[in-house]
Image 1 (tube, rainbow, N blue to C red):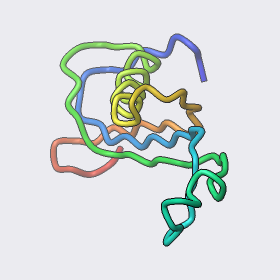
Image 2: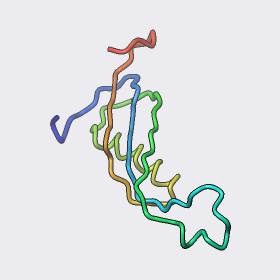
Image 3: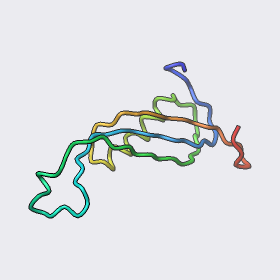
Length: 96
């Protein structure tokens, strides 16, 4: 894939998968043991949807837009993008 790929205007489906560091506390852990039982792990977040692109834009610009939304939901956590796909959809809703 070209790093400067330009996406044409139109309707698109997107899928984004990111991994991020997290602290896991096992369910039903008594409050006094939460710090002792907690451990660092990596979690995965998936997001997808559809959007209309009104003008040409770089693929990385579009990806970064959706990554920022996920980071905002995660209170600014550092994320690693593991998948980002765009699929153009025609006006009948069928993928092309």
